[in-house]
Image (cartoon, rainbow, N blue to C red; front, side):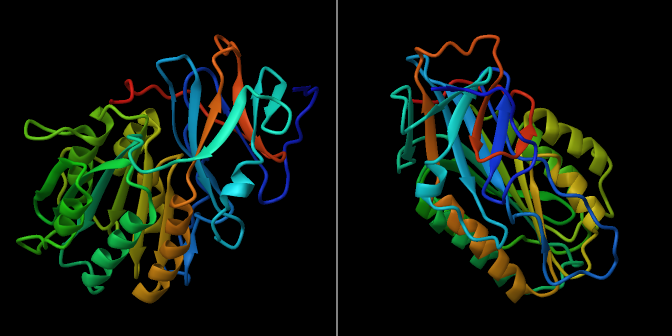
Length: 328
């Protein structure tokens, strides 16, 4: 182990520090938004990012962190690159080369760590071919290990649940192919609110008892019907839960609205055409296949201490997150 007297604030693109206070971590904060009405080709903040998808203390008192990442070109960080991470506890650094207290392993099928919400806008304001949505969602599902349960929802005037929480990947992919029954106006905010908080018929994402929460939303951000939720209210809900919200869109999406909906820990991709969107999402999705589990042994007391992970030297502070105990 090494004692760190100072930690630089800025480093190279593969350099990240993520600070947590006790039991958990979440994502990097999002990049600044743009208010331009002409969509760039493409615009995203997937690039040059390390995402800590969740954290937990297991039954033996070990601290487990789950991470993926990309470089500045958007290419996935490899498992080997992620395995260079160190864990810092109050300035003391632990790494896999010197310290048996730290291990970094590949996340494998059967690790029940992620609750995944899939929410698709089927309103008439969506101008792209809806087949592109199913292609991209299928790519995301195929790219990650079988560590998730998922809920599949679509919306226009109203929200439709195509599949309530399930772990069967075949059923999840089949539900992604089911279209919304009516294409009309856009109740984006109310639909996203139910997807996050639930209602009398279903659990919302933030109610699920797994260490990581991720919501993937296809939308143009053009709400014209909601009456219960607002974009800023949803941003607050997302930030309080530290959920990972990934917003995907093409065309003249309102980037300021999308950035608010993604919150401080999510990401936005807006491309001028579906082909560009597919290219950008495919690069990020490949990072899901390199998900790692970073484990700090229970012999290292983290109670009341500042804890973080670092790959290099850039620092990003986040607040602690607390979900329920990992299911068996």
